[in-house]
Image: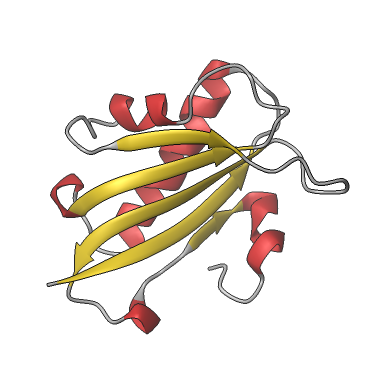
Length: 120
């Protein structure tokens, strides 16, 4: 079993805690589903949020999904002029037998424009 990394992102329509929970939950669920993972396969998850998001911690959505014994951390994304607003990004470290090339990175909705080269 190898350690792999999975990337993903979602753009929120608004800065509201319930909306963040819904959208980040959908992103995490898609990452797990598209890679055939369960919470037991997760090693850790790093979340970043753009500076315009203040309503909640993105990691709270993971806890609400039942990801309770995995180390999670949140940080603020760089405040770059012209960057896409209201974006939560994820970097998940996992255990998987998949090759790097077979890992499905997940960019939902408008966030797909962030990484057209790997967005699914």
